[in-house]
Image (cartoon, rainbow, N blue to C red; front, side, top):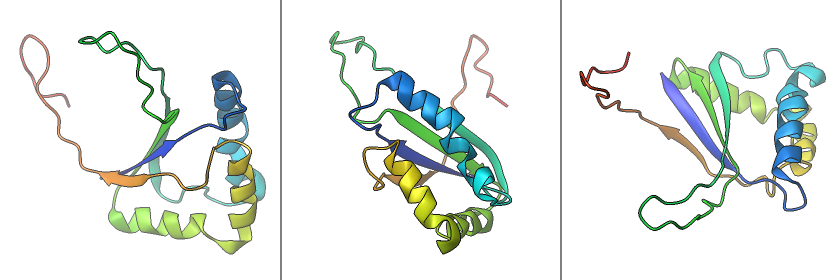
Length: 130
């Protein structure tokens, strides 16, 4: 399995509530409205994690990480991931996608990564999560 992680910053003139609402109600539905089928080919999971800065337990400081949302998408293979990335840049949909992102994000230039995950045992029995 491969996971893509994208770090997103909302537009400065949007509240966090406006950002979350537009992302969930409009942006996540954009590909479907444009007729792209499927919107994320072979994706297994698509998650948005909205960031709420908290106090550092050691210093008490609240430090904003610089991003408002961490978006994650999982695919079974690298080939599935690459096919989806090619589809996202399809000229038929690219301009509309860029315009919609400008309504939501501070920039279209966002850090995009693939990640490898390793789990650590947790809990009293230190059992590996499944």
